[in-house]
Image (tube, rainbow, N blue to C red; front, top):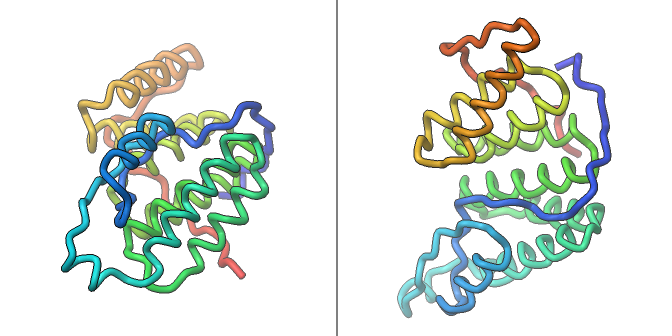
Length: 203
């Protein structure tokens, strides 16, 4: 995506909401409190004695790391959040959805730091793991809007709205983009597929 070259600093922490992290080993009350405080939407999978015995030994540490990354992001320490999420995505034994969510979280930290191109790459990495991950598609579309890549952004936002038609924020952002494109004399292609991006290999 050779045309992406803007880095725009956007003030204000907050990783937004996402779905897909299973917070095993924590009480349901604590998980609900975390969900309310952070604005995240968790897959709350209550653990049982049997599942606790078979859960990967890394799982509690994974939860702690995600919380640490979130707190760093919330206080505006984007570099620390990116470092934490990078360590998470490098772990072995993550499920496909855990890795996808980790890339999405890192992408959000990069976006809020102003590294928009790198954020697009991380949202794409999340989609490479989980192709129909609505929030990864939606967040990538938002960043593409910030980069004035409106046709590509429309394809993403339209796809996110199709995958999760009841999410009001998806519909609202899509409607706003339609208006912006109309004012710019651009025709929104309702049948456009989300763009194909090949992120650079990570070291």
